[in-house]
Length: 56
Image (tube, rainbow, N blue to C red; front, side, top):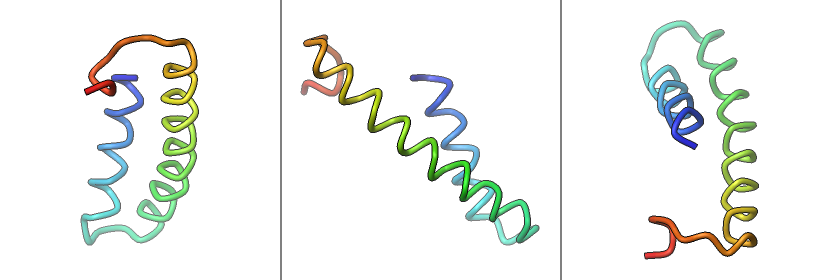
């Protein structure tokens, strides 16, 4: 999860910077897929009845 969160953060930065629009589009597409992966991982984690910071 840490590497996924890190990659998501980098893509958010690329999107928010006003630079290359092609890079921003690519980062946006990657972020969309990463969001899906994050939601799926979170659901699987909850289903496995694990305890984490999400349980707070």
